[in-house]
Image: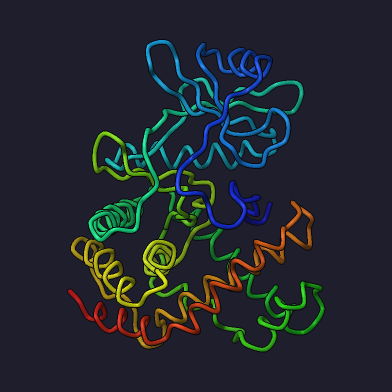
Length: 343
């Protein structure tokens, strides 16, 4: 596979909390048999056919495990993700990683992976929580600077960037069929070199810090980062990832609230991380526009190769993100001005 093109765990915006549902007795027995663990089995309420999906298994001693049942074609990327998670764990970053002996593959073409379970909740949009998130994100980015195999991520990341830029050119030339609203945006409003702003001072980053991939531990304020399946080719500016987190966690309908949340997030981050937020060539607005375009182009790639069926809500989600970056210029300028030139 050229680069990750996974179907999202959640379509559209994830729920405010994970919903675990009871499973049929035969499913529970199958998960227990394949994992080698005995206990209560619940399934995460997301779209997953038949046995495939995400499970929580609670043993009699109350120890918990996160169980993935996936097609064997997904195992390479999951192994690579776990290699990264194991290394981050050794650097003091809280992550979930595979138990020894997994993955286990079966004759029906599925594999089972069992992870240490982290009991936590999604990050709520409060100034205290976002300051903590900014601090922990800085720790993650600083750890990634020392990743021993960063040259592999760099090679894959630059290849992905080149292919997406080439795909943008094809869309703009009319040689690739996409939904009409997507075509109008990419052809009429997007500069061919827009994606280059994401490569200002690049390094290894997480690559997919959506709401569902960050948890606050129930027993503490510790932040846990999950799902490193995109990291193996995530060679981008850390400020691009920071911009993405700001968009997902700090952009409320009200500018005043958004500015307060952004100050908390960026203040926590820049208390630990060196450098400045953005410069004139890589403005926060252009960072956010480029991130939305990058996501749309990934969907175009999926649409072309038929990896999975792209629902309309996914196209509209990133068009809406692009429009927000264009329509809230005053707010984004205020955030940028406040956090440019620090340190």
